Image 1 (cartoon, rainbow, N blue to C red):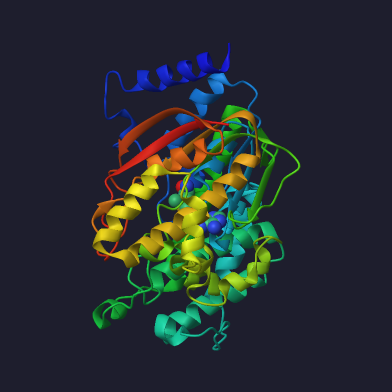
Image 2: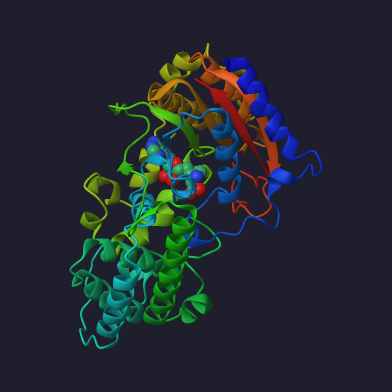
Length: 441
Ligand SMILES: C[S@@+](CC[C@H](N)C(=O)[O-])C[C@H]1O[C@@H](n2cnc3c(N)ncnc32)[C@H](O)[C@@H]1O
């Protein structure tokens, strides 16, 4: 079959799903997060079942897919779905917390040993008599009340004394969820935003919350292992997939030796500061984790300040805007139109859009170069609003990719019933839809 016929078959297969139910791809009521997908709470996670079905459609027509690439891997939704299909996987992200989540999902899945180690860990935490705080960072007293600091310290020290790194990673991830639940920052926003006195008075016990988290994690890892075994993708205590997870800034070119066969990813929908502050979300958990345990690619400078991750993410720098816009000008008519519209309302806001798109273009240029000829790309995208004007990221992305000689295959739009996006924010407003853009290299 030639490439165009193959594209047509893929389009028809995707369309066939929604023939009897036009909201099929919304996955309403079918998007719960199970097994490894339930190990972390992370902002703007994709629907695992949907990504899985899209991988299946593409694989049914492109039989040579061995390695999947996600340059914005986040919590690793695409990683978990690739593992369930025995595919090799390479995932990059700028956020060390995302790298930790993916490392844990990747395994090994020593479930019996894990249960023993968790029992031992919980015993140590319970019997800890230490009365000093184990970590220090600017603002610790603002974000954690004294008793929470002491209980988190007991957990931190118990994890540090666990000899196996694979187990420590699982424990750190459970601790990261515990830190989010017991800090003084509101859970209604991803930004660091102090709770009211009444809310702070109600903060729960880190030891109790951690215990629940770790027991839940063990259950989820057991289910992941069982599913992999049922599907024939477990080799002893590990998934068969070869996995490489790296703390990489997608803007910077990091060429790989092999070419990937399928890209499936969801980039941020705008600069972190005005869409989703992944960095602020992760700042407090990362202060309570020994980051040298995550993996050797972690860049410690990303943890220095509350805004270090967000400033390094796409659109994080507003420098040299005119040069950036000139570099983009001929690539995307939709970007130009949108910039002109926003400019007539609030010229300052165009800077954010230009800087984000400039970085996005660098990132996708790098990503496309990592793909083999004819590899498919599945991009999940959202159109946010700036100055109440919709930014057509789906069109901009398509045009940027076309300027790299990629071919448009198909685009589907879906409702996002539960996705948490910022809703009280000067620039972004709540998003109810997202687009899946399928292109071919
Ligand atoms: C929409 S999220 C991905 C969520 C993921 N699909 C999931 O299901 O969890 C976008 C990700 O892009 C990452 N990111 C932002 N700027 C980046 C950059 N310059 N390089 C690499 N990753 C970046 C963020 O840290 C975030 O994890």
